[in-house]
Amino acid sequence: MDPTETERCIESLIAVFQKYAGKDNYNYTLFKTEFLSFMNTELAAFTKNQKDPGVLDRMMKKLDLNCDGQLNFQEFLNLIGGIAVGCHDSFLKAAHSQKRI
Image 1 (tube, helix red, strand yellow):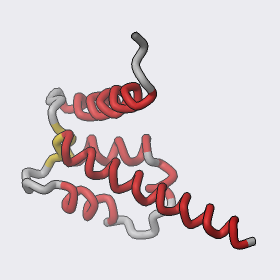
Image 2 (cartoon, helix red, strand yellow):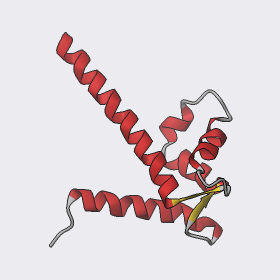
Image 3 (cartoon, one colour):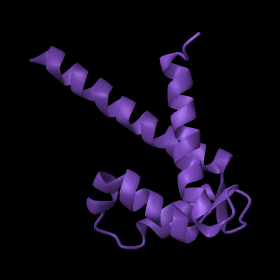
Image 4 (tube, one colour):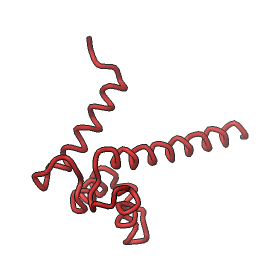
């Protein structure tokens, strides 16, 4: 049986995490340099639009719930989930605005 679209999305998230987490030869967490590489490559539109140079450092600190200086997969998923919620909210606002016209 072929994987569902949702299953493929989950596989993709795992693959992306492992791609960046493996750069420092420890593929269980994202160290700061790996996090920055991920953000600047995979979420380039977001990072290029940031005016504040410290925003990525603050994001990592906020995501690092256990304060170990790195992001595990759960902490990484919190980032992805937060971005997805923001995109969904923007989509809903745009759809609502379209209906008013």
